[in-house]
Length: 257
Image (tube, rainbow, N blue to C red):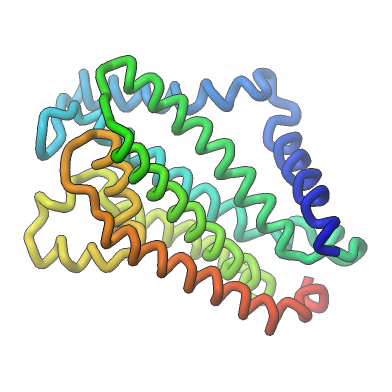
């Protein structure tokens, strides 16, 4: 079974890719067009209609916002797509003897690949408009993306399993990711908040990877290596928790699908 998991996961990823773009006029072109369109809207709204600058440093606000928004979308989209993986594949789970978690992995990995490619494309545009970063900053950003991806996988595994037994959980997850958007430093720099608020938000394990990405790629602000390490540990703990829940409740999935 384990030897077959790799090829099966690749096939599931291919199916995710086909389903995402099937029937679309532009097809795979959306992979590049969508993030570029989102970046253009940000630049127009916050650069022309509502001129704004980052709360610290000389970074233009559209660039500041892009360095927080696109990593957040990578995380949120992965969680939201993964939460319904078991229900959406109920027929296959009942007929095909495969680890059900593969369906969650395919959903999350497919989402991360698409949004990661969009993030790279956006970075290329930002570099063309003057963004500069060094190797250390790039390493911190890569670490931040990796931590976000692992946390997304762990949360998607937990939520997908619970969704089997509590069918309205997907709606709750969508609301929580919407709330999390405002509790993470996407629209603002945490250092500009009141000290008590900044410390309280620092307990959010998503804060350090987001700040590592933005600070690493903008060159502004200290790189939060220690906090990023803590977030990585939280990601590993969450992943371990998801594995434990899978072992305990996974055998009952087919009974409730």
